[in-house]
Length: 482
Image (cartoon, rainbow, N blue to C red; front, side, top):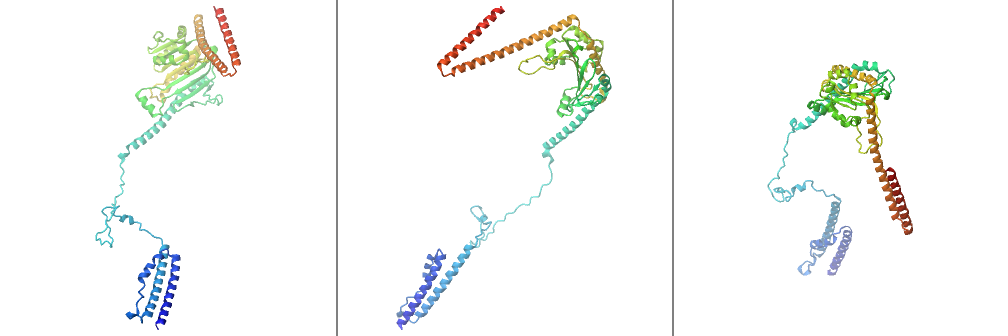
């Protein structure tokens, strides 16, 4: 009986070992921690070594069966645990989104209310204040923006009103003088495209300047009228005009025929304009360097006369001209008569290489009444000044100098030509000298760059002979001059 029991026990033990080995092999293929599970089996397996002396021999088969069932149950538990581990691996671990708010090291004074710690304190609640929306507008904080907007609006309104006013003044001037101009010129308002007699009217150069070209009259090639109004469209100019009064002006330039005018230069202007013209105008600064008072001709004291020949001043300032100037002393800015008119001086630093082109010209500048407050109705009052211009055009045809005056005028022009030739000759001589010096320098550099000593020596001898010949020619020229 003992042998049979022992055999039965051995069979059961082998079977249990076989089952355990198969389970262990399956677990080691999928579970990386299978090596550590044997320790659990050792603690769970019951003690099977009871001796028969203790009375346990009769219960050995039952114990062996219980041990087999326990081993099978343990294997089933391990397999279920392994399947649970696989399911846990398949799940995506999620972290509480606000778990970092419970970090006591980051948030001081914040105590966790976890039941595991047994804390009876509640977590502090964060209360967000309900701030009402402030919908009222504090306009005093936007005073800079309001001032800028107001300035832009005022500037725009002033631009429109100033532009419109200048346009009305120009039209009023043309309406007041149109009949007079059409009776003296066959073409009034010629813009180069209009047909004769069409009357193109004023040409707008800018918001404050208008021009009118008239042609088709005896004694002259044409007449250019420029209406220079104040810059009423510019707010800055309007403010400066309030501080310092200024006037609207009419500038008239009549280009005379060369055979219809004698040779002299004359200018009548107020003292301020006379000083400016003597500096800026080429013909006045050249032929009329001296300014004389106009009282000897019966004119107001604030006028100055710049005349090349005294006879020319007496011929221009006849009784009619003096009467008109005395009637409008504040409106006459200057009257300029010249056969050498070439405009303002050139501001170029280099000396001119030729004499400027000149044309016999009558130039006038008249101030419009009002001192900046000109009204369209006031334009009619300056009509006699336009009649004075037309009178002087006819006057210059009849104004002839005497023999002495003509000889003096011709002598002055020859003197100016000689001075100009000397200046240009000196400039040309300086340019020629600079050119020769540059040529010598290049020749010396070419000689020094020559590598062959013999050829370099021949070039130096040739250069010395050339210089000696040039010096000999210069000595001969000096001897002939003596």
